[in-house]
Length: 173
Image (tube, rainbow, N blue to C red; front, side):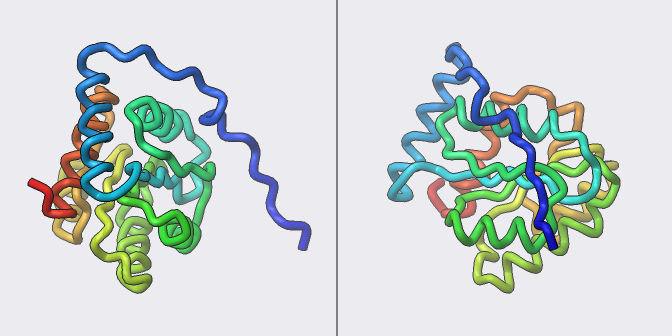
């Protein structure tokens, strides 16, 4: 009846990182891949589920912005339908889902099915969170392009991996 309050995410006010050699190389790959696809690369960082821990998602969103991506991030506790709608509205090149609630085996397939139903089944989906190896394997078998867990803490390396995923999905390599 009264709508839903969405607090500021903290992503838009974050300071841009100084570019070392590794981040500069990723920035160049983001730029070049965007040119090949006809515009700036757009990454949706979605936070489905009920967990309220947004630090990881926000760190990924900030580093993606630092790497040259146009980042779409709408905060936490999104439904799969809201994520799919945002992906369609923003015409993103990749959907990244951050799930720490243990509900990845329920929520990720819903997003994949929603993207397929929206005619966006070719948009790669990556997932990050506390995900057991067996679940990560099952998610990849269902169509997830990459799974990142806490052992994958190199944010710049993750950005390079996202570029790889986008290039593969668009048959650029």
